[in-house]
Image 1: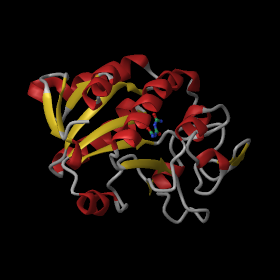
Image 2 (image 1 turned 180 degrees about the horizontal axis):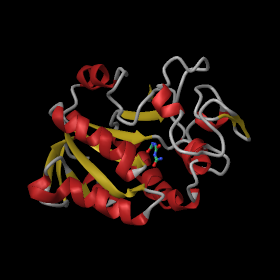
Image 3 (image 1 turned 135 degrees about the horizontal axis):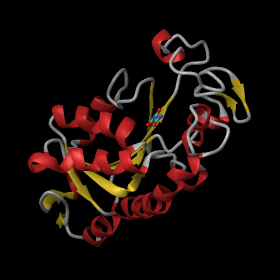
Length: 223
Ligand code: TIU
């Protein structure tokens, strides 16, 4: 493919250089997308997230073909819970709390089956996996160093959930000087109205913290 392209996006088309662009896939973990994990323990209908998988699978395949760096993130905590704030552990009235044993292992704990990426989007050995304790992918992680190492200025962003970890990460990335193109159908929320609002917030005010594009537009630009 060509070295650069323009993606049809909102609020405006965005031109990018593939040599400085990475794909960032946020928290496509069994704990959020499958029954029996963290998302369901919070009372959510996890089937709402399934719609983001086919578009993200297509963009991941294209990124691998074009040779973009691919970065996957996973939200979760150390087995001893030393990186899990008490305020997060105690939040709400979940059916199981972080660290409790569930059908996919301990809820939201690194190394457990539920914490891993879903099979359809499983990272290749040459891809980066960032383990994060919070909602944002920069807090207490090496993501900033990884982006510097690869010389990245623009991120294509997919993942879950739109208004929680995707929004938090894109806001953080924007403040660090990265241009984020959020792939609308490659993201999902347990709440369709929050998905819509989460995307609308990004692109409002002239793209206050990013751009929003459909996977079809991104795939077309990837050639
Ligand atoms: N609950 C919810 O919507 N999201 C999270 O807790 N984490 C992520 O979004 N990954």
